[in-house]
Image (cartoon, rainbow, N blue to C red; front, side, top):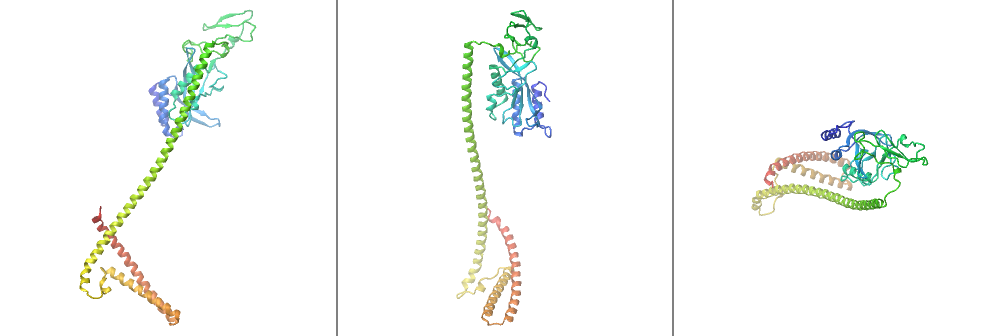
Length: 412
């Protein structure tokens, strides 16, 4: 599926296919879809001959996947003449974090040059820009511009020589024929096994989309027998300068990548420290809240003790002799009185059982009488302890209610 050749329709097409969900959705990550759309929109605006579409890509392991594909031609200037090279760009599943796959797609009357430094016989393009792809700075527009420059230095395609052009006419040393399109075709004498000066097929600007300027596609390397030494020197100097510049750029990029990795590592360490500080701050806030609660409890107990002292200062002033502890400590309510009696009875029974144990060990009391008294005292002690537990639970509930009533007085 491909959009109409219109920038608005192209943008709408990309928005639709990238927003699809379900089995027909494209396998790109959600955070990368916006950048993919920007790359393709910029590419179609810069090179209208390239149009995106969706197509099925076959992996080497036999699996198939629905991907975005850019199909069309890119301009190439060779010997001051502009040609259009047909290419196909596949945006793989990991794009834009990894480079796309680029193929040269020759027509039936074109042949891939062998050998070529950047295009293998199957049409796969391999250039330094793809090998040094850096996310997110690398993009399709710069890649196509780099392709056009490299192809202009050494074209990847040339015109296939037809059988009619390769046939030689006998009894002529040098003949010139004119084909149907008006192009002169020169042939050599019969002594040679193949022609040495067969020009490529010519196209008019209306009959082929791949021609430009003069309309003639680059010829086979077989027809270039000699080159101007000055031209060769100039090309070698340019190639050396470009290679040197490329090496400097690669070194600079590696240095920047090392700096970026260092900054990312520092950022990771700072985030870990931020998490540790945030955790410590939360613990300190929780500890502060606990201390505030304890302070409120101490203030409430202080008020209770001060009130008790005020109530008992008069009683202590009237006593000139020894103070009776039973009269000094008076339960403030019925629950406290019941708690005091149950606790006193429990402790008294505990002392009695201890005395009976000592008497039984010394043989001062018969065993049957010891067992009878122990059984009776234990039953009575159990009831006193059960009563004390119930009273304690009632006191705790009353204390919670009292604290809730007093809390607004100590609010900060």
